[in-house]
Image (tube, rainbow, N blue to C red; front, side, top):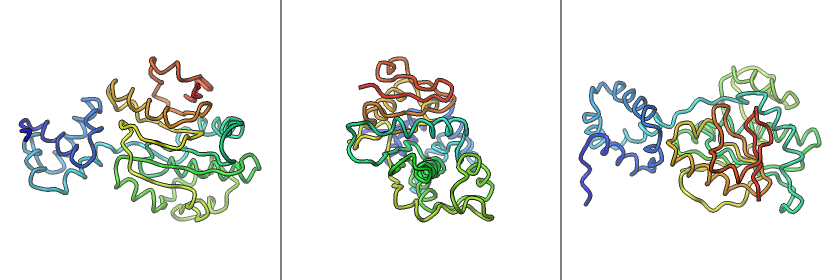
Length: 269
């Protein structure tokens, strides 16, 4: 049996046990800030004391995972990027040799679902405009708590303005009260727990969004995540990264730049 001795090693061990091993590859300053914030929230003054708490309380490790994985998200974040994507999807998301008419999209780190539902709203809008035949969205995240929120599909009223700024042609967006994801979208969006540092067998996607994820990981984990995401794209498929991120230099042979400003790339063969 492996003996896990130091407080930090014990904490990483608990995260690994609940499927949070990739969080341990976050950049050290970010990981430590979130960990110390959780220590303060529990009234503890040291990492060792927090490790002791994890030993005693099996419910604390999932709370820590949520605290570390928590990201900034929202509907149609960086609207100009979404408008650029709307112009690219009809022309680039169906290759001549692709199977069937469906545009398969992947929100690789969907957090509480705003990005995944933004993708769904955008695709539904393109269908309404006659620019897209059919679509589906797979949305993945490491934290099951995030996915519980995402599946509920209910968000504060303030998000309506963000939605209306990009898609104005869908019913229900302009009404008052909390925003409820329209029922007609729900059947086409699937949520699942996924660790982006681990290879997985996937039917190829036409479009993948991996936004504001890489910046949290160290260099080795960035390469792992990018390779997993690119392996999930078909040749010619589109990849959109976050505004603060650039694809790793060693991955450039696999990518062709489509829109520098909006961090949109195309996977090469």
